[in-house]
Image (tube, rainbow, N blue to C red):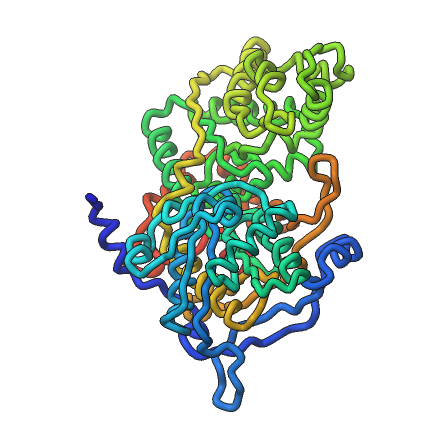
Length: 541
C-alpha cells in the first residue's frame, strides 16, 4: 500500500504522556460523588455505580503498597462509537500498550462496526502488527464505528455471551456523551448480573460538548478546530486579497457552539455567531440578520465590501421562535400527515412565511427516523445570505447602504473528523488509552478515563477516572425521561466567550486583525507544535 511521507514519519512519533503513567502506579481515591442534577432519580437507576469517588493515578512512592501493578493476563474489548474524531487510533494504541506492558499475554479485541459488533459477535484480535499500522493516524478505520445504541436488556445479555466466549473481562467504549451514557448503563447492568465484566469510557467528540470540571476537553476537538481554522484563515487571506466577497462559513456543532467559538478565537473573523448567546438574549432571526447587515454596511462605508461570518451548525434550534416553529411542524407532520400552514400558530405562521422558499420547503419535507426536522441539514449559511441580501436591498433603498454584497458559502464538517491528529490529540489520546488500561487493572467499572491539567507539559498532566454517573442528569428523549450525560454549552460567563465579546467590535470593522493559523505542524518548536486550543489556554489563565 502506498503511503505519504507524513504517514510514514508519524508512525515513528512517540506520544508524550504523564510521568505517572510511565511507572508503577497507585490510585488515590477522593470523596464520594453525586450526579450534577436529579440525584435521587440517577441514584435509583444506578444503585451499584452511583456515588463512586473520583480517582487519580499517581506514581507509587517507596512506602506505598501499589494498587495498580502487573496483573494476570487480561482479555479486553474495545468499541469505537459514534462519529469519527482525530485520535481514536491512539486511544486504542495506548490501551494496547498499557495492557501488554502489564502482562505480555493480555489480548485486545476490537469489536467492528461500533457497538453492534459486540451484539453480533463481530471482532478482530488487535495485534502489534495491526496496531503499528495505525499509530498517530486519523480516522476510525482500524475497526470502524457505528451509532447502534446499547439500551435493551437483550443487547446487554448478548454482550455477556460474546464476552464469555472470548474470555473478555473488560470493555472500553470510546465515544461521546450518548455513547458514554450507554457505557454507564452497561456497567450498571453487568454489576447487577455479577458478570465479571468491567466497562470504562473515553471522552470523544469534535463538538467539544463533552466537558465539565473533570473532563477539560474531549479528544478530536483540538485537531478539528485547527483544520477548520486553517481553512478559515486561507479564506480570510483570499478575502483580504480579492476584496470582493463576504464568506459565510457554517461549522459543525449542533448542540453547542464550541467549534465556532474556538475557530473565532484562532482566526478573528468579522463576525462569530454564538448560539448560546442568541438563546440567552432571546434573539429573533430578524435580529441576527440585522446585526450582520449593520456590520456589512459599516464595513462598506469604509470601502470594505468583504468579510467573514462564522455560523454554528445548530443555530436554528437556539432561536426561540424558530425552535417553537420546528416543534409545531414536528407535531403537525407526525405520522406522515399532510402539511397545512393554517395549522401553525399565528406567530409561527408569520415566521414560516418570512423564510426563503427553499428553507421553508426543507422544514416540511425531510424528517429523521423519529419524525423530526433534520435541523443539521438546514443550510443556515445560505438562509442568512439570502435574508441579509434582502435586508441590504431595503437599506440601500432607504439610503442607509451603498456597498456591494457578493457572497460565498461554505460548510466545514467532515474535513476535520478524520484528520491526522495534532501532537496535542496524539498525546492526549494515547494517555487516555493508557489511563483506561490502569483503571481496568485496578478493577474499576462505570468510570470515564480522564487526563487533566492539559495546558501544562504532557509530563505534568494528571491522569485518573471520574464516575460517569457524576456527569448525568435526566432529560426527555423521544417522549421519555432518560438518564444522559449533561451536554456542556458555551459558558457566556467564561473567559473564552468574554474574550470574543470584548473584541467583537474591533474585529468587525478592522482591516488588519485577521489571523492566518496555517496548517497543523507536527515537527518543530513546542510553541508551534504542541499548543492546546485557545479555549483551554483562556480557561486555565
